[in-house]
Amino acid sequence: MDLSSTILGLLSWKPLSGYDLKGIISESDLFYWSGNNNQIYKILLELQQAGLVTFEVHEQESLPAKKIYSITAAGRAQLRQALLESPEPPELHKVFLIQLAWAESLTDDEVLKLLKSYEAEIISRLELHRGRALRADQNPKRSPRETYLWRRINDNFIEACQTELEWIGETYRTIQEGSYH
Amino acid sequence: MDLSSTILGLLSWKPLSGYDLKGIISESDLFYWSGNNNQIYKILLELQQAGLVTFEVHEQESLPAKKIYSITAAGRAQLRQALLESPEPPELHKVFLIQLAWAESLTDDEVLKLLKSYEAEIISRLELHRGRALRADQNPKRSPRETYLWRRINDNFIEACQTELEWIGETYRTIQEGSYH
DNA sequence: ACCACCATGTAAGTTGTTACATGATTTG
DNA sequence: CAAATCATGTAACAACTTACATGGTGGT
Image 1 (tube, rainbow over the protein chains, first blue to last red):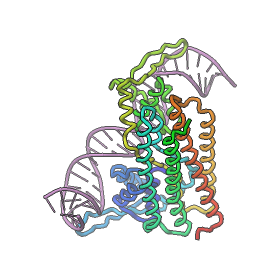
Image 2: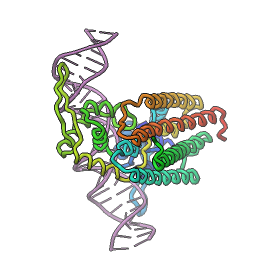
Image 3: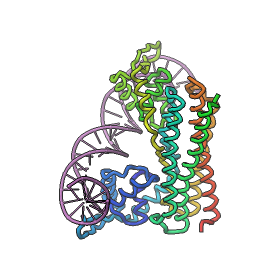
Image 4: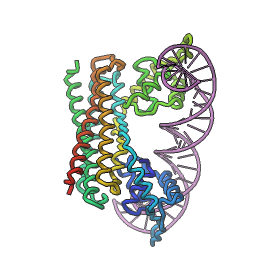
């Protein structure tokens, strides 16, 4: 499941332009790529040359024309293959933990301030995902199972945030009280 | 906190060779880089040219000589700056969730099989981190606070695994029972 | 005999990033 | 009047990866 499979997945949901894809990918936390033009337009060209997608040009008055990409039967077959690949474990890039690992030269107050600031980051993330649960309008809804899975994917992020917040709280308290001896 | 700061952090703990650094970084989940030669030797050269580290050549009989790198005062100052930077939120690359997101073309059984397989991955991760908690010998222990923080960092990974396992269980049951309607 | 370990480094490639270019339209 | 949005695309660069090269030592 790399970026090209992700794009195939998005197109399996509904036809989209490169610009649409860019928007969706850079908004989302699930699709964690930056969603920069360079990669998306390059991959779309490759997918199209491999016959996995096709496009139609839609002219618009007073706006630039757009290429609406659709997935082909071959594309769907390819996507199915990718979906059946055995799952990889998640890669967690928790840069803040690296920061803590080498915090020896910081005072308790400096560490506590970092923890507070990290907590604020996670809280805003949590609210973001909670909000997304409410207006989940732009999610695919092809079947009850798919609707359920998308809710669960969002839940996964929410639960990860909650676990992180509890971890922060416990760590904060212990350092504040100096009770790690 | 990028790879060069991470290397400075490791050297702030104790002097190490490039080969040592490679081993530590590629073993660990916290330092999530692959730890390939190309990056590490290149960064060590840059750090050394910037005066943030120095090295001594240690000749060994019947083994190749090694360069043992140490952090300088300037390096420690630079590291401290990096540690005080405001924390970035974690980047979670949960490729499996992307797989689930486009699972519409799979049967219930195929989805359940994927979940089981993902569960096995996470369980083995969990056991790895639990084991690391026991023989935490190679962790830095310059102060009780540092020892505590390193234990907490490991806890963070354990708790993330546990949350993930609960999430998998709940999702599995619901799909098995078809009770997502 | 073959493989892994130690230890340094290079080569060649993929992937990913920010920033730029164009140009009309809408919003503050 | 500056900015953001729509829409495509390119250029330049940074980050990261796998594989290779060298060469002695020790294990199965």
